[in-house]
Every structure is written in structure tokens, then in C-alpha cells.
Image 1: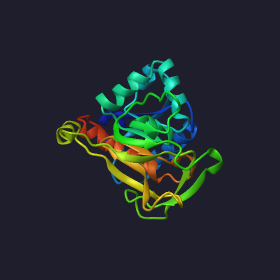
Image 2 (image 1 turned 180 degrees about the horizontal axis):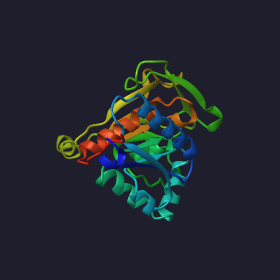
Image 3 (image 1 turned 135 degrees about the vertical axis):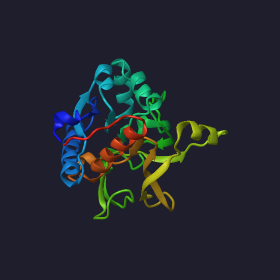
Image 4 (image 1 turned 90 degrees about the vertical axis):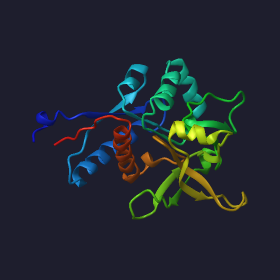
Length: 251
């Protein structure tokens, strides 16, 4: 069957281009899409990747990545560009697949602690409270091995932590069962990392998912490891299908 015969539907994935590793994310997305196509025994959708700086560009997107940076600054810039409310609509009303890395995780949280004086505006979408700068300043950045059960078997993922937040609380409220029925999903812990020495026992939560919203404390885009981007693109396709969109394949 030819491409024209199936009229393939393109999936447009945006990367919010206000700060952070925008180009790096797009580069790994391109590699992930190529890997999906080469490894699949069935036709895969056609992906397009764009930088998002305006509400009009956001409206073209079927899915979005919010990269790292400084979350307070990102919120201020998004407000000035008229993007903050469209982002909330995108994530919380349209329920489109969204992934936030580091500051992006902060932006997608319902609440944040250790914020600058006066607090900051958030997009929301994940029923979690995050602790900003869990591991200290940029000078205390580090790379740590992560066992992420949602990835295919292989070497540990080398997580890059730069002034990284962690999820310190999964928020539950009265009537949570009804909220869950409406939203369809509860928060899932997708990855953890041992707490720093002297800060208690156990592990910090560094990756979570709630429905179509995914967040990581670390920066997968600053590695050559394409596994998380590949996994996420698969989730995008499944999320769009479950949302009622007829995602057709490229043949």
C-alpha cells in the first residue's frame, strides 16, 4: 500500500523553546522516531518535531516536551508570551501527552516547595508536590545510574541531575476516588534514586506519570541514550489512540 493510499496522519511533537536543551530533545526525538520505524514490523506514524514559542505553534502540537531551565523564569516568560493559560489548556483540559524534564517537572506539578520569594505559577497536570533543587546548586550536579522498570532490559540509565527537583509528595484529597474516575489515572512512580547521605533512608522519586503526563527530575536529552525518548513516543501514539484519535501509519 502506498503512502498516498493510506493518507498517513502526522503526529506533531513540540518542544517548549523558552529555555533549556531544546535542540538536544529534538535530536533525540528524531533518533527515537527513526529507531521506532526501523524496529517495527508494522508501519509507524510519521512524526514532525517543532520548537514552540507561541500559542499558535502550541495549537499545532499533538504532544509536548517542557525541557529544563529555571522554572520561575520559564513561568514568567510563558506568562509574558501569553503561553501559560494555553499550556494549562493543553495539559489539563485537552489531556494531550506532555513530558517535563527537571524544571519541566516542576512546571507540571500541582505544588512546589523551596520556591523563590512570592512563589511561582505552575501549569499543573501531575497531582504531586515537588521540592526544587533537591541536590543543591549547579556545582553539585552529578550523573547517577537509574534502574527504570518501564524501559527495556539493558544497562542502567545514566541520569543527569542538574539542580534537580524530586517529588516529595503525591497529593491526595477528600473525594479522590471521584477525581480519579474523572481524570482516569492516579500518579504512578516510574523511577527512584537513593536519598543523599545524611538526608534519611529510602529513595527519592525522580520520575512519575499520571495519565498522559510524564515527568523526570533528570535530563535524558543530555545523554546519547535514546531509550526514554523512544518509550515516550510509543506512549504518545497510544495516548492519542486512547483519546479517540485515528492515528494512521506510514507505509
